[in-house]
Image (cartoon, rainbow, N blue to C red; front, side, top):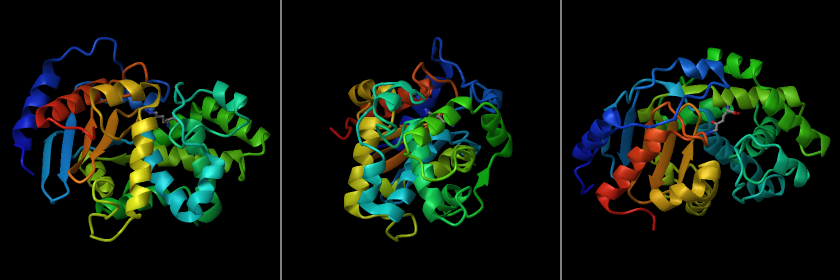
Length: 306
Ligand code: DON
């Protein structure tokens, strides 16, 4: 890798440590997520050439939340192939990640696999094909990052389960349209558990490196085909940051997926994968410092996917 990534990461971390992120605050609709200290920050870059650069709390686990949706999509695609696209569409939603309005108007078919409705439908598809749906995303993540024992944080799981009325409403709405195959409670349990996976920024950057390597994993074996990889990257670019996706493409310009735990994964195909983590979120539910850090990185290296 040609740039001095270690220096760039230091400059980014220095900036983030003193920057003002205004009204950004942690997700509190899942109470267990609000316990994390505000000032935590980590950033890890995994080059396609095997080099790795890290700064901050890169080895401290955090709740991956919606970042899991990308990995769940890969599992569902493996099991169902193109039939998957009968169940979920591929258009940006333009509305909040947990909105119900569009789902009603569009007869229970989610706009894309990254909003909550789409990810709940994907969890439903996984439940129909995998032996242990409550663990399948965690096990897949373990294979991808080379650490078999990936943990589901039970406190986060219970917290979301207890405050999961909106996601249950989404699941029941889909069920009412005949668009959910398995019982609502089984599907939302699998979904909450995949969101409650705890991983470090280093593990996540490694786990998504296949997206920068035409689908080839850290162990040199194919995870998905190059064509499937391009499709997942296209979906992250158009839907990965929810109703902030246009701004993010404009200011950063790479495929990325965020989670309300404050993590964001991203890739420049052929160059690197990156994971950034800082828990305070903007109004769209994306990490405020995370977006700033990615913007600085892209500016420093002078290129995006455009
Ligand atoms: O279902 C939820 O609301 C959370 N478990 C995940 C939402 C999320 O991470 C959205 N991302 N920015």
